[in-house]
Image (cartoon, rainbow, N blue to C red):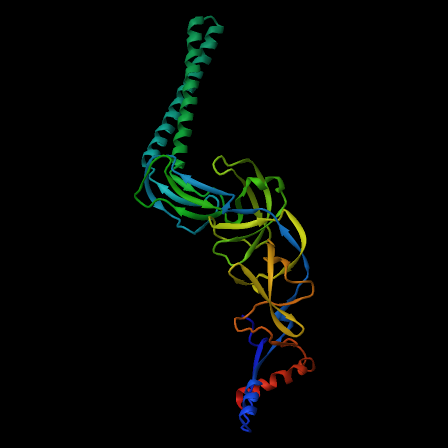
Length: 390
């Protein structure tokens, strides 16, 4: 709606009832008219002119994070504690959930004892081998005894290596009972509660990085030839009453086998970004630009398959039928195929109360100086007189 302070509709009705005779009375009634005067400021209309009209293929898809992690159980155990809820911010390394680690601690303790025993066995075998080498040098032992000592030392070394490996595996199993954040982000979905049984592969939580959101869209295969990295993209996201700007990062070299559409990855430009992932988005890739007359979308009046605008021509309000073409992907303006010419004045936001042929007076804006607005006062005066009855 036009602002009341900027648009004043003055209705001047003057009826002359002269009782001088039958014919004179009919003539006076026939001359009675309703004259509407519309006062319009510069903020209420725009001038039609040539503008660059961006064009390109439509892209549809959803907003997805580049960094996301589906944290799953790597051991089978009971969920003992869940420390983070949906929407909570986490730092890299923060503990998110803890599984029952009783049996894994026992396994770790057993493996550590086995590693110590293997180390002692190796130390003893090496001392025995050194003694036999000394005795063999003096001829007091046989070569067979020396070889047997070397075999026992080698076996002890192998057992120590195996024991250390089992110890490392047991320690890793124990660490896997603690589910930790892999990076700074937000918990997007919690899958378990205290007391649940977590089998290997069961999803525990999802963590996303909200600062890494991007637009993952699909484009018809017919438009692949005009797509390239670096092109600007204008799109809207479901749930946000604003337009977002992005830039094509990558065009997938392979089309989807089912839909035959091509995936296009779009990065956000600037700090204007959503904070929620998974939302539907739709827009257009700016693959080209042409010069055309344009009109604001808010100025259009749709009536079936016809389109009209309220134009100001020779000081009168006129309902002009136009034909619109493509829509600009950046501003939302429409190209005008016919019905308007350069320099025409069109009201930005038409009202349903407008009448064809109403007089239009261009006035200064509310913040302008009084002398500039002074010439408009006489136009509004008759309306005031008619309404108040003075």
